[in-house]
Image (tube, rainbow, N blue to C red; front, top):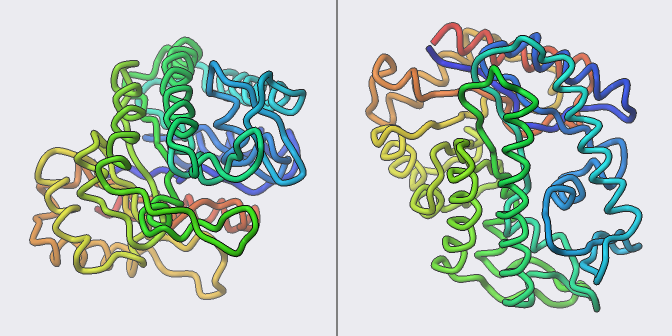
Length: 329
C-alpha cells in the first residue's frame, strides 16, 4: 500500500488554527498523519525556533537578528519549549485511540547551524566547535523528544522523524551568506556533512524511530544522505535532475522509503488532476526502471514542500490530492 503524508508546515496564525491543522492531518492522512508545524504563530513556532525547543544542554535566546546561542536560555527559548509541549498536548488529545504510523519533523544540524548565531554574532556554521556542540545537543534532545512522543501516542507502532535540511545544498556549496551579507561561509566538505547527519539520524534510530531526511531544494546529494543513515528520502519531484535518479533508485531497491513531492505547495490556479499526478509518478518510476508493484510499499506521496504559504482551502485540497494519488497507486 502506498501511503500519503504532509511535509510538515501548515497555514495559520493562532492556536485555534493549529488545532484545525491537527484535525486535517488526522482526517485526510489516516495512514501516515504528522505533527503539524504552524510557523505563522511566531519565531518559536518556525523551523529553527521549534527545533531549538527540542535541543538540550545549550542556552538560546531570540535577538533582533534571529536565534542566538547564549549562556542560559532566555524567555523566548522557554516559550518555544512551552509552545511545543502545548502543541503535542493537542496532538495527543486528538490522536487518542489512533494506531499505526505517525510522523514528526525537526530541523537538521546543517540548516540549524546556518540559521542560528553564535553568542557574539555570525552563524554557528562558521565555527567547527559550535556546530559540533549544536549537533550533539540536537541528537541528545531527540532521544527525549522521541520518548515523549511514544508516551503520548501509545498506539503508534512506527514513528518517523523527518529531518528537514533545506540549507544542505547551500552549506555544501559555500553559498550561505555571512552576517554582513558581503561574504560567504566556507564550504563544508561532504565527509563532515555526512558525519553530522549520521550523529542525528543515529540518535533517532537509537530512540526507536525511523529517520528520514527531507529537502525540497535542488542539488541535494541524496547518496550522501542515504549513506549517513536515512531510511527515508523526502524529495520534490519537480527539482530532481538525472543524477538524482540513481541514488533514489538504489534507495528504493535497498529497502528505504522515497517520499515524492507531487502536489504544488501553493494554489497555482490550475489544479492538477489526481489522474495526471498518478501518471507522472508512474512515468517517474519507469525512468528509474522500477516496477510500481514492487516498490509501492516503500513509496509515499506528499506535497512538493511545506504548506505554510498555502491558503487553508488549498492545504486541505493538497492533502486530499496526495491521499487520492497514493490510493491510485
